Image (cartoon, rainbow, N blue to C red; front, side, top):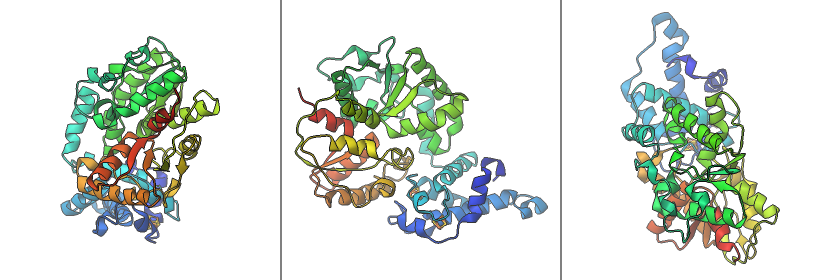
Length: 401
Ligand code: SF4
Ligand code: SF4
């Protein structure tokens, strides 16, 4: 493996691991995967060997060594079985940014052609159909078809102050159609000047980026930025934490300049609307708990906005799960793991569901369509009477006529 893929910090981090094993105790997936090869500590060791074999002193004297195929396949399996939740980074006492190491390892696996086959299909669908489902992108607004009335804002205005970036999952997967439907109801009620991009919304590129295929997303990024700028928008509101993360952290880097508009997650917009008194909420007298999406919490640093929104709803009785905020367990649905290891996703989701059940909540709120989908599937499979809802759906349910 060439050194050029790694930053100086990452090279130092490979040697900084003290092998204390704290990351193993906190890994969202390690309890489910018995094999040490999947442990964060062991992945660092394998990555270090790969780097030393390709560029270490011995490699410089004797030429780079060819990595053992079996070891390469194990590392590939381990790194694609990782939800990229970043709990390991949160607890690492020497501050190793493990998640960025997993991403660079995935890139290396793609370069070596050693990655799960379904990712080729994903790349094909995203780069040609511009969404993760492979549907015709002209059907991006299919979720709006059973709205009583489809407002102009949904059909797409020429110009608007806010662009609502819906995301691929709620656009094409019926389990989550309720999220954009609720978002539209809330923004309409608050009197916001907003629009969607309709079929001009392309996948944000996140699924390919985390697959290690980041070099395939430039066209998507350029297109989306141009489409938002054409609306004259001052703000982009992302319903999906992964879209939000990509817009905030990757887009300015890829286009090489500031976006020229503000990027918010829907939870921040909701908090603002409630603070300004632009939404009147009625009673929602149910016990509720909140699941922190990894890309919103650990990766985006947004912990309080969703909690403030929940607490603003009259009648809600809110209880935290045992593991919350920085230490929240992943729902299991991150890291594209569902593409190659659905069993693992379900096992992690079951554990998170048990934590939610322990609070006595009837409603499990998240602020991510993927978390909602994963947790509601787990609840159905386990026959647990708990309702998974997105934050914006909760607000829409509490909105007074
Ligand atoms: S917690 Fe950090 S230092 Fe300890 S084993 Fe894991 S990566 Fe290494
Ligand atoms: S990112 Fe999450 S799943 Fe991956 S190794 Fe770290 S704790 Fe485990």
